[in-house]
Image 1: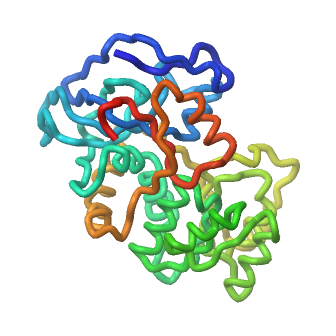
Image 2: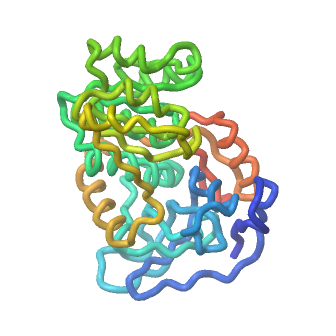
Image 3: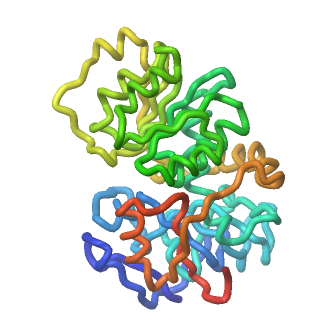
Length: 329
């Protein structure tokens, strides 16, 4: 089969399409004929050699496709359309997926839309509800609102709880899109200090929950933006990972709960439990059309390097998809 590997740690030019052995599914696995895979920031970190947990030589952590082998005691059959997280190996014609975390693609959705769901929606769901404990009377500040996780989080927060949603982004085009998805307040972080705008939007109280993709460069403004007893979940470090100083007294006086998380290196059991709850809770919203995966663009698998550049330059609104099967769309 064909798959995309990293020749050596580095830039997008290190991605290479090559012939590889078809993976073998274990007794509790599904073998998936991959139609679509999705590009994630974690793929870029793996490509650069910075992810110590990436053991599969083939990139890619989420796929949508068709079951071609179904082993073990589970409810999936050959021919089922499924989506889900894989332990690497997504950028390939075939991938192995633990059956415990596979999710059937809602009938109304395409393979492309299915590939756009697992990583970002599960991350958003975990961050909002398992860690962030979002409630209907809360205000949530979602940074990078037009990113894959951002677009998922805006919809999940608004549709499932009705919480007040504040989203940040760097262009008016992205801000308009966040508003269309349900954001109540949008802030262009390039044109105004977002912390002041958050306080204005919350009667100087601040947000009850912050989803932070940025890290170090947003530290001080996030401290200002968060309410007393607020929850702050760090899920990315696009703005750096190191701080010269940390104001612990503010964290203590505001009783802030600061949690860091990554989904990809979590255990199979954790991902299985998360996938099960997510599909039970959110499938009705997909079927109604009130929540939808947001597709930015689709690249042929041979142009995985261009897809990575597209993400690294922050051109996308929503998910970037790789077509692993030229016969499907």
